[in-house]
Length: 602
Picture 1: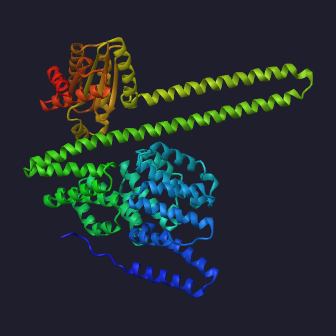
Picture 2: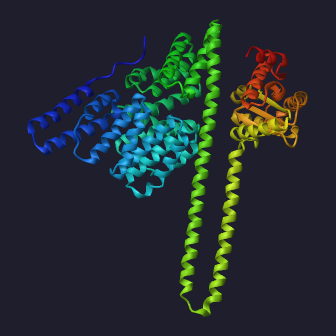
Picture 3: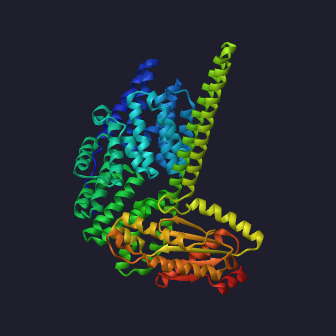
């Protein structure tokens, strides 16, 4: 039996009567004024239904798509609503096309800004993070040129995008730009949107205390009838916080009351999240079978809607399912789900790295543009001064020359500072901020260049790939700060063990790699052993806890894997996972006989 109760249809019925009355006015009146009232009201109805009743909204959009609209302003609004509808249906390309039409139109500025923000949000889902962040930057720069209501909406959607790309602190800073009495001055829709965004930001930053809990519950009560999507989104993060704090019974009871309403809204991402939280809560209260059923529902929904988009809630559903099936003795099914989980975790980590890189690139471009503007302003000031000084008498020539020299010196100084700043930013983008090793992108590009040169010079290259053993349990048991400390100490011993020309990098999470120019397989294995021992000897007492640290290593070289970088990674990865399967804290070297056999059969 599914918990919850049936939702009343009185809203849909009253809305249908309202719509019918408007149509009758247009038919019976036969006047231009009555026709204008009809299409304006139809657009208003559709705009209201966007977040209150998505299914009714899609029906309304089909109707307004056929309306004859006499002015550009309402055509732009219709395109905005059609874009929203296509996004809701999962047709991102058509949605982007509609939003771009609005942006390219001569519609009023607030509508164009809303279209830009909707497009930015959609581009995040399409993994075009750079363009999305650039759009947000562009709109934020216009915030002071619009009225308060539009400016407040800009801050809210900017925070949504920042949350989606993992910049939660930046989202919190953006929301802090809103006035303290936002709930009183915003309209109902935007006030409820704000509540949902705040709830997500607080949850991601682990800041949901009793005060925030009361705010979320108050917003839920205020928005439940008029803006159910935003209300249930805010409630979702409150439930997620309870699950995280292992308050499973309270979380289950809350979901019992809301699950039917969530399903009726048909927002796939929201429904998937609720299914996963329900499964976790049911597991926590001992309802294992129901937990498996809802985890399976979450997986099916996630795979049905978008296999390319991986959320933490989908990962949680996969992992929980595998563990519960393992407990029941269904080992084949459990293993299959666990393998799929590991594949998706890797893709999720890659996606998070892409988001971080996109943010850094946009930050760098923004600062570079600002510096160029400042430099041009300085040059303009210099030209103005030169023109004014040219009008002076000859007696002022020495003064003019002195001023020009001073200004040129200033310009040279700022140019020098700008150049140094650009070099610093470039270095930051090439370095993993936590460990100081090469970032994934920089490691890949540098390694490929070294491989190309080594192949031409017929030099062997060694490659080591290693992964921290039981690292997730360290994070779970001692916290992420201790986990970060372990990663930093590991990076230190790797640097100390490497030669001067070796390239060490962090590929993501707890996975590291070492690229060894002019190094054969035997030397690469020796260096791997040095690193393995050094990692295993890390003294963790500095953290206040004592626990073992170890890593599993996979080693190969161009002698076995050739000069293709992806082949090196693939072979080392297989060897590393072989080391893990053999008991961890050891080295496995790629088997030359196996490689020769693979080449023979290929």
